[in-house]
Length: 233
Image (tube, rainbow, N blue to C red; front, side, top):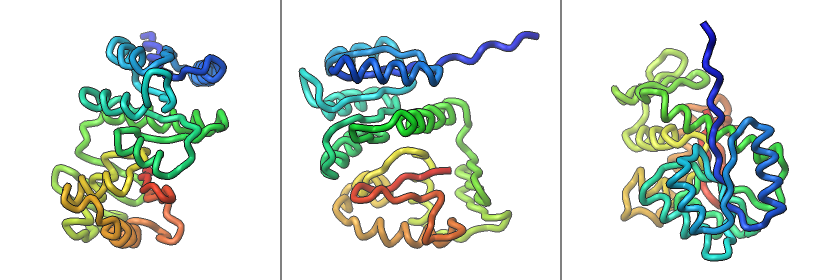
């Protein structure tokens, strides 16, 4: 029996600079992606709705609006992963885009290898979300049973406080995405704690001690300096 050929992931590139757009198309096509393009915020929203992409690569500086506006509009109806590209290097700009719904952020100029690594990570995440039942997650020596709210390490039950479990579950539900302090606080502690960033630092340190082989050099809970954290399984 002949196997069906793999379906090429669809990537929408929203970028107003033709040279950069061409570079992105060529890079993504070498990765086996099917690429569509848009040069404006308005066209990007139309293409997102009609093409149903697996991933959006978004420039923030668009001629008819800011990419953050695109993110807020998109997140009203879609959870498509979005990687932001921008020349803005300020941490506040990164945080604003991530809080608006971006999954990752690359500062221009960037290398092809880094771009494609981020693209692969987001496509893996989307594939897991679409195919896996989501009740179990195993990585390294850890096993998370979401249905029964149980965590094991090397086959032994791992005791987590209620807050530590909520934090781990939120991180594990957003693998390979950058999460800001505010996003974590809002989803784990609630909207009234959105400014209590010290909570995140304290509980991340505690969680690392329990799940990392070497908490001083974590492999799973990675710090994005000045922005937040990324969970890698």
